[in-house]
Length: 289
Image (cartoon, rainbow, N blue to C red; front, top):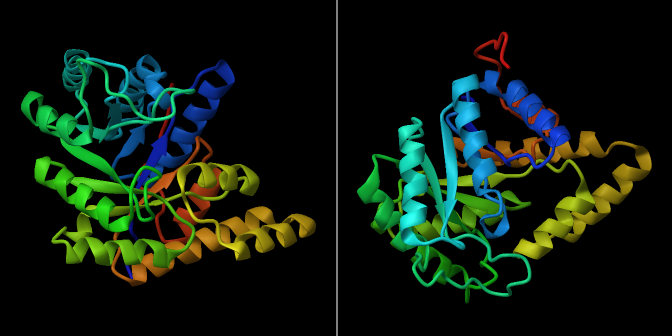
């Protein structure tokens, strides 16, 4: 079985220490020659400027294909498209087009009066302003605002019909969760190869668990037991590496060829999993600022 194609997600730094951590993470993972890397927006679009700076710097300094997250939150249509045009001018050719999470304290997403109402409107508009590869979000378990998985699949199909090129899923903890979703997409007429599983290496179980519950991701009881035992034995990192590698290996055995890693700006565990899957350094970076 050949090695998968990988991609990585980073988030923009908000402090000097966070900046060092981001650049160390990019420097460590760039030699693995990812298909692309993406840079997120903060909730409510709070890191819009920081995201732009991180996207352009990573592209210029590391020579990576960078996908910028772009959301519908707290901006007019004109403002959002102006950001997209600025990315195009900077040589960015990939965008992850998302509706976005509401600002902190706002219970549900409320479109800007002059903004895009949802991701489909955003995708359709982006198709008119640049030759972008457009990636979108997908949910192998029901989105917190969705009735069920069938509704999520129908919405995802509409995203592809609007012009999306591929979809990256929310993370999950068991391979079967993604495989069931992929089968549902295929039955709905979606090209399953265009749906990329989102993988989150578990650097800190309690932190990831809290994040999962907030996003509607199921937390298997066996994972709580496994990390409780590993913590007592001082083997949490070993367990995390083994579990992530095993899940990715299962996905690959079922025909998955692309894996997108949510790095949380921490490189070691993601790198170790990639190495275990046969993804090794293809380039050496020298004198990268």
